[in-house]
Image (cartoon, rainbow, N blue to C red; front, side):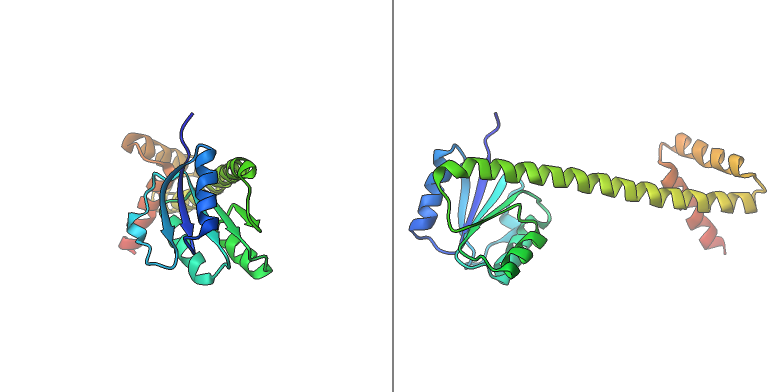
Amino acid sequence: METTKVLLIVDSHDDNSIELQEALSNNNFLIIDVLNIKNDININSFSNDISVLVCQFRRVKTAYLDTIASLVHNNPCPIILFTRDDSSDAIEQSVKIGVNAYIVDGFNSERIKPIIEVAISRFKSYQKMAGELQKTRQQLEDRKLIDRAKGILMKSKKMDEQQAYKTIQKMAMDKSKSMGDIARSIIDVMEIMD
């Protein structure tokens, strides 16, 4: 089984953060680094080799969430946030940036593993749904472009709809491109000529 690599970000190196580090280690999570959110965190040094991002903040501040959002923007991963902050605003802001588990008032060692596993599972489900949504949007966009390109071919080449479709399809096969890409090219050429 693959080792779960954790980047731990805290707002204070105190007994609580030491307890969390121990709980993570005792549950066989590999802590890659422990960073203090109050210091400048170099976003470029954030490794995409991280399995999960675990944060521990007394209070959830917008600046902290902005930093976390920047860290995971190009390297998406599950985010778990331990805090004492039970305000609705903090929870809402955290969810908006992609926090998968928001845990108020501490942790215990027995709960760490299931919390992280659930967060990872939620993250994977969300990523899958987001990917499917993006694919569906792209298919709809391609369909619109193909219809528009068919119209151009029907008008300029005096083709019927089936001939125009088969022309786009054949061009896509000949050039090893998608029909959407070919339709975009046809539309671009016609816009230049107009």
